[in-house]
Image 1: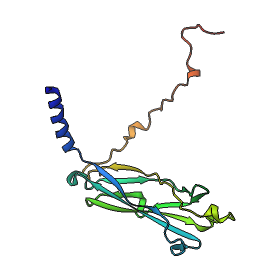
Image 2 (image 1 turned 180 degrees about the horizontal axis):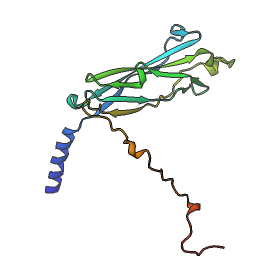
Image 3 (image 1 turned 90 degrees about the vertical axis):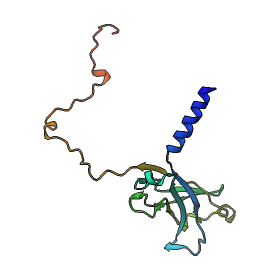
Image 4 (image 1 turned 180 degrees about the vertical axis):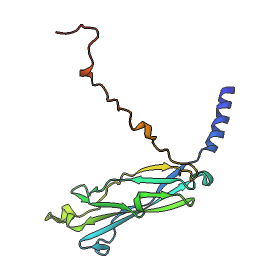
Length: 179
């Protein structure tokens, strides 16, 4: 009984001290008004909003958050697959530095309308196209301005590099096992 009580107290203390950076999809990636949202010749844009927020403002402000995602995605209406060629983000270099408790990030995808109609029947083309955009998020703390980067020492450059030994190059010290 005492062990359980001690564990509950420790878990309560440690759960309060942890801070998290959470991500919430505010609006999923959707192509709306295909006839009215052209950005170029036969190109349509879809927009999605993602919210990044923190549970501990003092610890997490100033952290750098990077996003990685594929260059293209596939959408389907369960009858036909289409390829969305370009996927991107509204921030440069796909990274955000948390300056507020909540940051709103805009993702976009650009679809070539010629991908929709390639001479198929209208029953195949019609429908709601759905797909997923996998996003990998990395959280990094900012580098302290007062620290200096570690530079290689010039004496390390003249040392020879030791290459790995492959199994077929190892001599057999036991002398047995040969056929």
